[in-house]
Length: 141
Figure 1: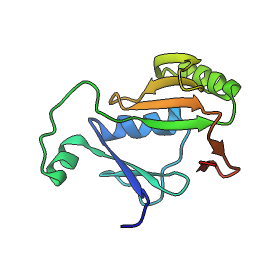
Figure 2 (figure 1 turned 90 degrees about the vertical axis):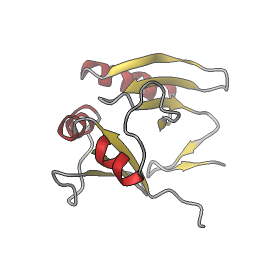
Figure 3 (figure 1 turned 135 degrees about the vertical axis):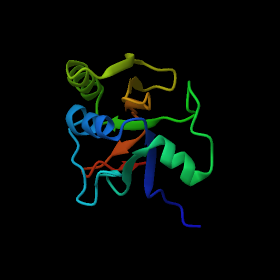
Figure 4 (figure 1 turned 30 degrees about the vertical axis):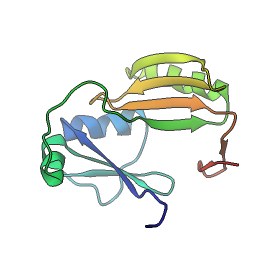
């Protein structure tokens, strides 16, 4: 198996609300293949998909019920600490739920967390040990 990740699929309670969140809060653009049943956002080298939680669970043959910590987070890494602060301020002004305010963290970085409409956690972080290239790709040097 090749070492790669192609799609992160999020099961959402309300597809339209979730799509609006990513479009209007994060400022991302849907791909042309998005439709009323599934929404895609082109990331750098992969896709983020939004799909109704019940249907995603049915497809995976698992129970759609559950609450609390989902056991994973997604991360948006910045190039500087100041970018973290600016981005959190922008997101907060757009009504995004700030789960953890930016702070210095034990591993040497600077980190904050926000949640989308379905409580999926996004870490907004500066990692001094991780290079973000001009295309937004993480490069572990």
